[in-house]
Image (cartoon, rainbow, N blue to C red; front, top):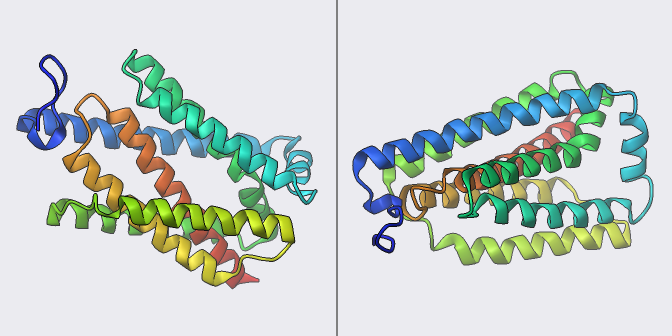
Length: 234
């Protein structure tokens, strides 16, 4: 159905030109976010302070729990700004904040992967993530299926996964390959769900919010694909 008079269309009911423009802007914005993430991560990893920050983030029993809590708070704020109707500039500030937070969160994993694992493990994880993302995106666009029914499943799965992660930090047990594999499936479901929303449910003035949601899912997929490859190379 269409939005209130004077407001943008819901994508599914928008004219073809507006739908195409929305989808094009969403994926261009996503590409920009990924490039910004790569650039920030290269700066972080190459900096002189990276080893000290990595030790600080991972050194204590509760260090990573604090980092994760801070990331969740920043993510909530960034998403609220990206969905804001105040201005498009604020939406991009929200996306930029989220990209920076993701780059900081990834620092320990990518620092360890680049310095203590096989040199091809990060490029391989990036290629696998890209291929999976392309396949899931093509599936959503070719079938035109509405995956909004997955919302409840993903919400419950997200809370369960978060609970397991927090418990692993508090009680000191390791999350193995099985958990990483399940999280790859979860991230894939999230990409399908978000892509479906881009086709059917976002408003045509929300390409930044749509790009942020996709970026979040892609980064989650990349995280666990990389963890699986690092474990396989040990």
